Structure formats: structure tokens, C-alpha cells
Length: 160
Image (cartoon, rainbow, N blue to C red; front, side, top):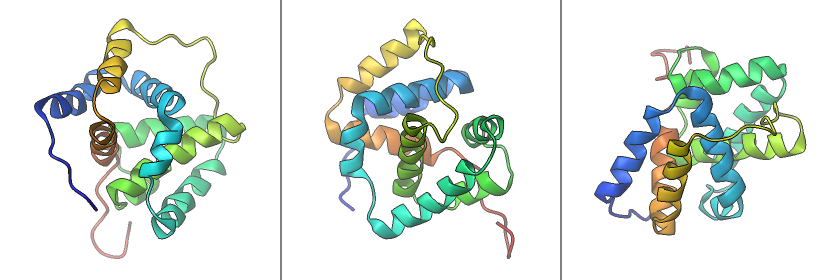
């Protein structure tokens, strides 16, 4: 994988994402997907990693909508459970693909839909604008950093 230098702005955007509550973090990820979805597919990993993140996505897809939402919240909050530990064991590209699959599932109606009347806060809107002002590779680096910091560490031994 090609490595790109991380600017101070990149670090600030990645770090400042955590200032938002979990539901606003989910909203930001949704709005970013709506604006950058096709670009993210370019940065998505190869078929082997897609198969792994797709398998985790399929586990989430089989849950009730309330459970799907809670899983997303748990991943962003770093709660330790089987799915968040599985997520935590993924590589950053696979995590990015997982969120992309979730957003696609929302579009398809198999993942709990995003509330149509939701409005981002001004601060979240400014965050997205700042992301959009970054170069494409920096945008992907920021998103990878955000999703890579999410989840729970895998358990030692045979347990996930």
C-alpha cells in the first residue's frame, strides 16, 4: 500500500471527529458516503479484504434494525463485544470497506435507514467541508484513520 504523508490538518480532522456524539459521528459517515461514495470504492481493498469485511457486514445485516444501530454505535464507542472485536481485528482498509457496505445497505434498505429529516450541526457541517477541502488521498487517509480507531481490540487466545 502506498503511504501518504499525514498533514497537521489531517491529524486534526481525524482527532476532532471524536468531539461529536456517536449519533452525529454516524451521520457524518453517512453524509461523507453520500458525497464521496464512488470515490471510496476506488480506495476500497481487494477482493480478499472485501470478503472479510463483507462477512462481518452480513452478520450485522441479519440483526434487527435496533441491533444494527447499536452495533454501529458500539463500534464507534469501542464497546467490547463479539462483533466489535471482530471489527477490531480487521485491517484499516477492511474497516473502511465495512462502513462502505453499511452505507450501501442503508441505500438498499437492508440496514437501518438514516433519518430523512436529520440535519447536521453547524460544527459537523464545517467538519465535512474541511474534509472536502483536503486532497483526495488525505480524505481517504482521514477516513481510514477514523474507522481504524474504532472497534474493540480482539481478545487474546481463541476468542475473538
